[in-house]
Amino acid sequence: MGKTKPVKKVLGIDIGGASIKAAIVDLHRGALLSPVQVRPTPRPATPSLTWETIIDIVHTFGWNRAIGCGFPGVIRNGRVCSAANLHPEWIDYPITEAFTKLSRASVAVLNDADAAGLAEMQFGAGRSLYRRREGLALIFTLGTGIGSALFYRGVLIPNLELGHLELAGKEAEKYAAAVVRVKENLGWKAWGNRVDEYLAAIEKIISPDLIIIGGGVSASWEKFAPYLHPRSPVVPAQLKNDAGIIGAALGLTIPEFTMTRRGNP
Ligand code: BGC
Image: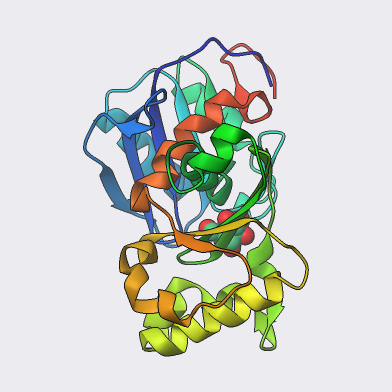
């Protein structure tokens, strides 16, 4: 990964299990500078079909500058290492390099929950800890899967995969992700209790100073928050659905995730 020039306007792309969202982001204010473009994630979500959608989005913006992208799986050295909710053909795909071919500027690709976490830490619910470079903050995104991101004194510890812990005899994200509430037609109480069980399992192994819960459900916080009883303070994400896009763009501030057009991963 190469050293990057400071950039201000970035196209942030958030690849999710259900949809791909993108907007132009002001990196310094952590704010959107354009309306959000949304496309359904193609099915099957193979690299070639997903890539067609991404190219379409980039062309819609007429964009040939820096791009930051959040991906729902582990990303190491510019390659996809896991993709639980997309097609297995993604494994080992050199995603960062593929993006540099689309863009004439720097590109960053990082895990989607790490991206949302960066945004929440710098501009949302975690900003007070972030500004003081204090504490241990744990961010969850509840959507098609369960994403997790950990920050110690403001520094991201990347690719934490707490959604795949075992809970009630299955993978936690198959039991407590937001999509499970809809699929199994659970009420807010039944689902909130599952999320609470999940947090209890997490707190057996980690003791954060703050837990932030994001994903689309953060907009329905009042409906399930009464059922959550973790030891640590728990708050909703503040940037709601935009955290993934803003955080994808913020990936460009981290050299390990970033590749310049001439650089090598
Ligand atoms: C993936 C994570 C991702 C999460 C949310 C999980 O299935 O393993 O990498 O962050 O879904 O998209």
